[in-house]
Image 1 (tube, rainbow, N blue to C red):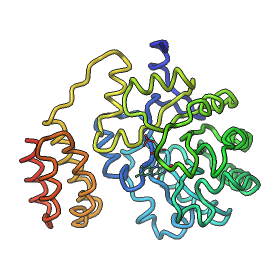
Image 2 (image 1 turned 180 degrees about the vertical axis):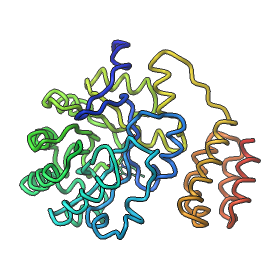
Image 3 (image 1 turned 135 degrees about the horizontal axis):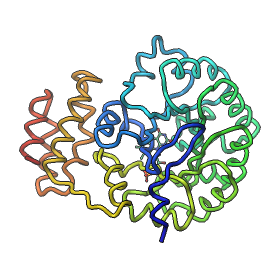
Image 4 (image 1 turned 90 degrees about the vertical axis):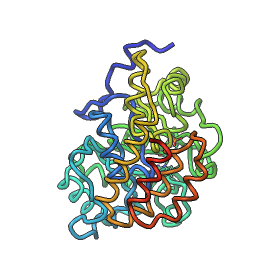
Length: 322
Ligand SMILES: Cc1cc2nc3c(=O)[nH]c(=O)nc-3n(C[C@H](O)[C@H](O)[C@H](O)COP(=O)(O)O)c2cc1C
């Protein structure tokens, strides 16, 4: 078993320190309204933003879209994608001006539209370009810089990539130990994550299927990593990081329908504030996760499709979970 002290220690990134459980990036899910909700449970935990391409940040007038978040969401690790050095300096300046704690480069995204431009996990298959991009970020960032990688693109080369990142001055590295071809399914490669941890001096985080403290503890014992990115496990579970911290201390953490309802309603209100009326449609993807486990879940999902205004959505949630 891990020593209890391991779980109470903090991870150091540059001159910053964070608890070991971290809110990972999920595009379209862990957005600004959701992060604001997570902050009601977890004040000090690091939260990743969703990935934004440096060109999108550099060309976004006033940061109206790509940099739309609130300072209360910090500490934030703002995740970017890049395929060339163009726009990196401009994007870094804008991000630092807006105020975040860390910048993370995504070197792991498997999506076709991302890899077709040479960003995301495609960078793991072009090491000279990767080195140049990493050095360019390092040169223009005055704040800590991290990367998130996979096992590799088509072939496993995570150890080589991790060493390159460390040599280029990266302050911490997260690994989702699956190849691009495996996307988000199959068993994460624990042995590889352990080798990456052993090969580096900087903190290493694990991403892949960690949905509770028991699994985090198992990952720690098999890999020795320093921190855990909670991805799908936090979806519609904004209390998840606090729950895991409580379990790490040997405490109980009670989740009941009253709490789930209160979170779902707040989440929806924050989305309405952030996205306006369009939130009625965007919120649809979250509802099945809030009502999963209740007897009428499929009726709720069906009724939701007919809702065109905020009030009926709220009434539906209250009827299902109240
Ligand atoms: C819907 C969805 C969106 C994701 N978006 C991002 C993203 O923007 N940036 C990133 O680095 N990883 C992204 N990921 C990958 C996750 O951060 C994580 O590495 C992966 O899902 C495995 O961890 P999990 O099992 O805890 O979800 C995404 C995954 C999913 C399922």
